Image (cartoon, rainbow, N blue to C red; front, side, top):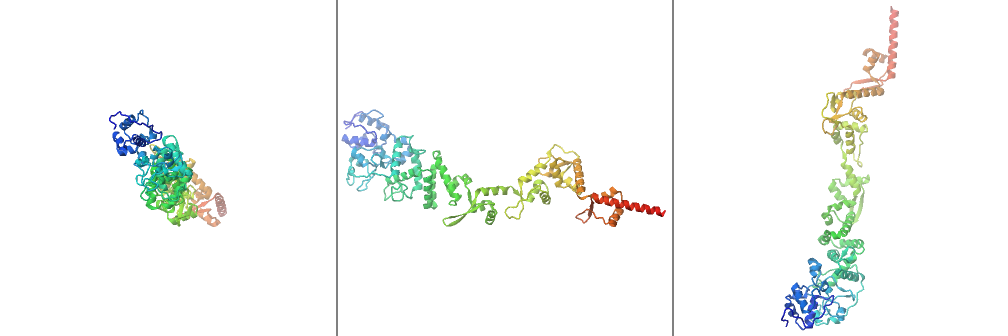
Length: 585
């Protein structure tokens, strides 16, 4: 009996460097012929704590005295303070509780319980390359620490040291187990690129949701993958979990090629709610900044999938991050119809006229029409910049009929999309024209100025149209002004003297083009209307240009050559009349 707090045990063995505290306590109790329960009760531990390396600080101090060791003789490799070393979440996830596993060859060489055997993902002895045993080979009963230390099954008395195990030669299984076990104690060592042990385990436990039910890519097992949380005949399998982790290791080796291979297989065998549930479980890892590289590959994969028509825009990854849709290169025809209002028939018409490019894909026996996004975006951008004739008139400040005159004069370019009968115009071109003709803002308008519409009405008979206003403004011969920030030409004012000068220019131009009017011919030749008409009729002289007004009235114009001819006829007639008068005298 141990009667004093500082009493030492008679036999005080040394703990092995990789021996678990619980295994060491059990070994110490056996050597000193104490019941295991006596020692853990003496250390004020529960059976649960004593078997699972969960020693309190008080218990550790008392145990240190019992075995006559200095403080600090234990560390994480002995299972001490593992919860702090791993973190509570990781600890609860990967540490084996209330049962053990072991390497048959290790215990033949030296029988003690190794700490690494407490780690759930480790299921290989990296020294002997054999699978760890986690149940009685004979009766399949679970292995307790007590049974292990007693070296035989509590149920069937099978001797654990007599078990024969063959070495494993599967490359990916061996390498994944080796790298995980090496990286457990060294936090700077990576299991795979970008991942130490802790990061790899977090990534692996999420990635298992993509692998479950699929083939074993490492060819370790012939059956489909299932893991410890999926029970097989009522028993959780540590081997299946280890195989699953080796598949995760393979999945991220040739990244992202193997990752994409797994994703393709996952989408083929998972449909409906099962697909979304498992993807949601995997996507939790994408929320962590450490795994940005996985996020980038995952996003790129589904952008390709939506481009191929295999998934839709309401797929989980796009619901969580709608901005990803901006990176796709194709859009489903149905989606274009929904968000743009363009009918299917019109879409195919635009494709025929090369305004859009529509690609046909067959997915699962169904025909999909995919619209090239770059051409669609370009078309929609152009479409948004196109306006009707009425809208052009509102921007300029004139009626639609006047707009047509501006178009006919070449100031604006009419546009027809595909074979649409509707004519539209580029809003940028319209705004540019207005900007060129818009007046300078002033504080007040002088009395000598008249506004835009007054110019058009007052000088309409002199052919002073909006076309002339635009031309004279662009040439700088008239300068517009305005009082407000108005954006149409209707707000413009013009100096009437400049307008009159321009009117003279118009008149001279028209005379050069059509000649001068009948009344001006009368004034120039100093003859009356009757006499002029008489000469024209007698000599058969026709007007060079006849302008017919809307009310049916006609206006006659004569060019210089014709006027000279008329003048000669009048002179000759005058001479004859004078001679006749002399002869009569």
